[in-house]
Length: 462
Image 1 (cartoon, rainbow, N blue to C red):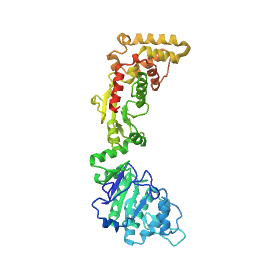
Image 2 (cartoon, one colour; image 1 turned 180 degrees about the vertical axis):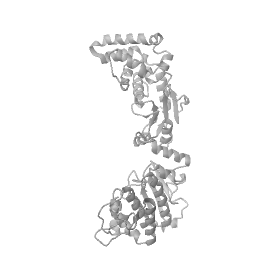
Image 3 (cartoon, rainbow, N blue to C red; image 1 turned 45 degrees about the vertical axis):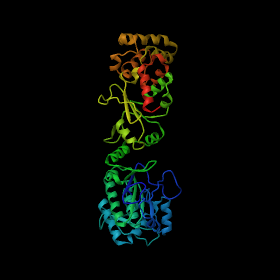
Image 4 (spheres, rainbow, N blue to C red; image 1 turned 135 degrees about the vertical axis):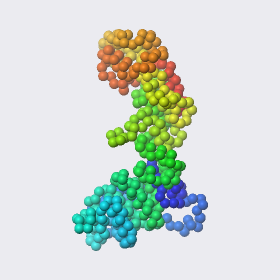
């Protein structure tokens, strides 16, 4: 299926979603396919579509009696594939060439010999061994990857001429086997005249598929246009979380900042100034850091940035606007951009960082008064004395001025913490600095803060 709405060729792989929810009532997770417009109507009337849902292997039962086809179909419809694998293998064994091919595939991928099934007793016995003369073991004792491959091969060999909806065939498989099983599935499907519709998040499988065979299944399914878009799909699997997908579909845009404290500061300033973006910052956009480790704790974990994330999120929603507010010390090679309400836009703080705009002696004094309690007057005096002794006089005279000192000094570490400690407030984390912003009066808020709020308004088309 080279396109999501056509049935025309074998080997479609669906990324970023599932192709169905199995038999049963309609659900939001199902998709539908239709023939191409050029398909002859008479062919459709005479065609019987045999479809089978192949769920992920959840575990193999120890006891499995011989079942009649209606019971096998019922259990498969219930997603209980682990209860019928032995029966599917018995069906495959009835055709010796197919069985030999299945055994050869298992030997090539795992190095084990699969023995013929024994259905003469109350339960079906299927065993495997390393080599002739070696001990044989029931397939229930094998690893989950081995069982997953057995199930997939049994399905393909016992359902010729069918459309097989395969959910996560790479489940339980090492990356080295993921490519091998997909290649094997394609080979068997071609031989059996079957069509594969595969739902997967495997980078290995997606990378091995031609872009024309890929379909992104999210909201409205659509084909992947080319190798560039396939790379975006692969990136999305690395950097996007489920929350990212949900937020991209429901929020106005994505806002990239140094950290969540920047959003808290902007929200307090917008509230004090009565700026229109205040509701937006309270929940109308979702934020991501400008740079972060997308897969923490994983060896060789991916470190990504706003540009990678934005390209990935566009696969979820092509027209989503993005805005990146960089600190002054951010990547100097990234220039500011025009604010058009489209694409990834970028502005930069002129002072060192967002916390630099918290510096105003009067606002800091109110914060000390609020936190220090009964001794607040003395604490405020101690803080003012520290500021006079350690900051340039021009900065103290005009906190809203254009000062090199505030452009070059990291306020979150070198200005605010020692000033608060001089006032007797030790251990105040920077995550609480939004409380300082909330105490600032409109005339104490730097004009550039309003400029940034205006930029947010334009970037997200308010």
